[in-house]
Length: 188
Image (cartoon, rainbow, N blue to C red):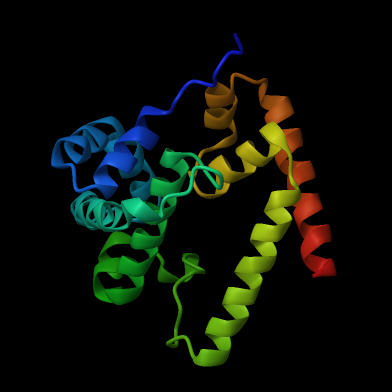
C-alpha cells in the first residue's frame, strides 16, 4: 500500500471556508493568526495598525478561499502573500499612518508615488507571468524555500528550522535559486 503525503490541515480548512464554513474559518484563524501577524509586523511596525491589517487579511482570505491552489503554494504561503500585500496596500493608502509607523519613509521602496496606469499594469502582469514561469522551473526543496522566503517572509534561520535543513544548505538553495530566477527572467 503506497504511503500518502500528509494533508495540510490549513488546506482542508481553506477548502471548507470556500464553502462558507464559519467553524472552519475560526479554526483557520486560530491556527495561522500568530504567523500572519508576524508577517504583517515586519512591514507595519505599529501593532494597532498591524492588527487592523490582519483583520482585513482574514476578510480577504474568507472571500478568496475558493481561489487557493495547492499546486502553486502551501496554504500558509498563500495566506502570507495576502497578508504581505494587504500590509503594503495599507501603507500606500495611508501615508500619514505610515509616517507614524516608520521612522523614515524613504526606507520603504515599495511605496508608490503615482497611481498605476494601464501600461504599468500590463508590464506588471507580464512580469508576474514571467516570474511564475521561472519559479515553475525550480525544483523541490529549493522551490519551496524560495516561496516560503518570498511569500511567507521567513528568514534564513526560520527556513532552516521549518525545512529541518542546515542553515548553510538553505542559504545555498536561496542563492542558487535567485541566480536561476535572474537568468530565466533576463531571457524572458
